[in-house]
Image (cartoon, rainbow, N blue to C red; front, side, top):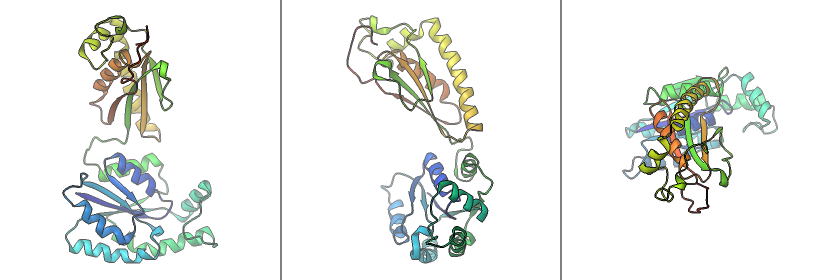
Length: 293
């Protein structure tokens, strides 16, 4: 089991780190009360707990109970429970700038100046910085750069990238997916709906797949689409502050042509170093209208 405690200065990027760890398959809990850590650890090592990668966020919001954390951590060590501490830091100037940009109030501000609240927090959690296995100063880091650092530290897969690609099939008669980044129309392809033996089947059936992919236009389209999406996805990974991409492929009803192409594209992209998923939004719709497949 890998157990990570994420802590540090408020505004230094803890939420970004926890989201990144969650994308990497960690079970994440933010702001867990110190008094519950022992109990949580007990549950996590239970044989019925499915995830062997866990991260908890602890910070100044724990209040006076934060002073008990060192006792709790010592107890875990004495019981031979291994954990790692990631401490996130940033300069006062950077933290002040971030709080002003978000217009949020620092947890310890309480009528004093923002910088006084930051200094008080720094003093109260300094003991965690001394205990930390890893310290990241996020002052000059963009979100994507911080996520990259987290991947280097905590990913067991050397080829892992913090990107999730969803390939979605859909039917135009049910509307274009609102969360799609790219939408491709495959209604020009041969329509299995007009074949009586294929009408009630879907693109998941080999007969439908063979029918659609028998057309030269389908093969050429898939080849060009896979090249484009591989290029675009790699560019997003290297240059954009994002970790999700939705590629939507649509036909009229979302059961035959779009499902076939989505499956084929998923297969072509699945060997790449990021998470690729396929989802058929309208495949279960059983409404048959002439020409709407």
